[in-house]
Length: 367
Ligand code: IPM
Ligand code: MG
Image (cartoon, rainbow, N blue to C red; front, side):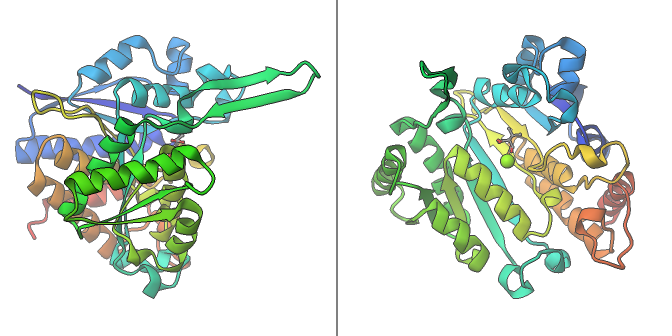
């Protein structure tokens, strides 16, 4: 049976980077026997315009039924005034929650060709290959009570709740430990247990799981603020980092800039493995909708194209195809193709479509 892949391009540069990703998927259909059916639907602001909500029940049902979802980006100034619960981002958060995509894998890899695109010294970032595992369905993003209330004295009070349970911590930590086993066998866990009870529990539970099942992996702990600093000082000291939803959001943006541009970072969000061996999965670039350059053929499609590689690897077990695609991206960079975000002064800049063309060209080459 053909694999079902649901494309949700979303807003801003989402549609243009998704167009290039879809061409790449088509290439694997035509040349590598990747048997899949692509369907495209609206999410975020595009869905607000079309359906009045940032994620319709029908699209959510299709996402749940798909073998993999590819998402572009959501949000933009056009929807600044819509009700908070119906803002574009709410569509993305609902997808994550309802599909139970608790494990968000955000690799930060510095390609040799882009060492100079980073604001950090080449020797600090050259060869960097980090994997941030961010918890994605709990913590302050989803905790209740939440909201804004008016106090008797007329003041307003904003409330969010940061909470984690044992099982929520264990299942994401297990993903990090498993990844570590096929990488450098070390995990760093980050929280703020010095000020937050949920952080204290996080450290205790990660440690307990480690002792129980993963003592072959080296585990260390750090407060998230200290890690933010260490990531700039000596990022190559780390391999797999596991952290909560909010710290993972922040630290992954920081890690993105170690690589020179957030336009290069893919991600995979995975659900629990089901009895039939399948797991819900959504793949998306870490960057946002970049409304300032939307529709101008300026966006870097490589993060989305690299997300296709993650999809081939994690949802379809097509390791050789994933490797081939990642190599094609490397070759494209080596051949000198640069979108604006990764170009140094004087370097020739290509647009989103030309970058997609270049990757397709590299895919065809034999070596
Ligand atoms: C991300 C984004 C999202 C988040 C936004 C768009 C809701 O920043 O995926 O990192 O905060 O999780
Ligand atoms: Mg973010």
